[in-house]
Image (cartoon, rainbow, N blue to C red; front, side, top):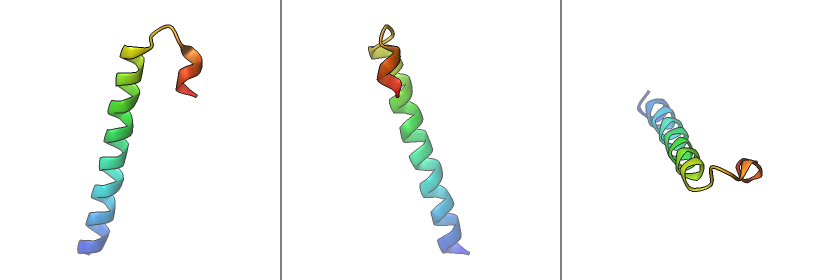
Length: 37
């Protein structure tokens, strides 16, 4: 059960990190639509 919770936590953390990076990229390069791909 602990290992499962840890796995879920790591997945959430990865999503948050990617989400924050995505928002940062949008703020840094608002005029580069191809940058997100």
